[in-house]
Length: 113
Image 1 (cartoon, rainbow, N blue to C red):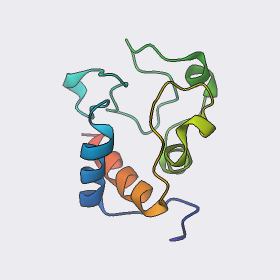
Image 2: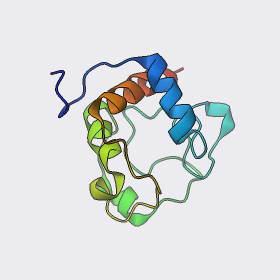
Image 3: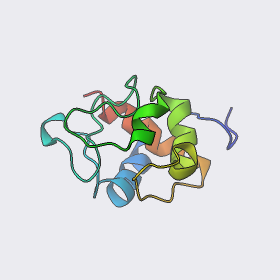
């Protein structure tokens, strides 16, 4: 672990900043805020792709059928369009493993509150 090819715990404070600058325009982690351009991320860990009520997903996203957890998010967030070809998420990805670790560490805390 600790290399750039798999998840390891990161810095949640840095992750919070990454979320604010790279994700918050399309996603909320607060359950009561509902969906934005992207689905609400509350309860993300342990949920399967394409499952948020009231959000219009692409078939590609619904049919991917994986469970969101540290390792799947680590791979997905590097290059979303490669991981789910046909996704409508217009995000180029976080190329640095450290950034993904930080973001996922923060998401794990925030999406379960």
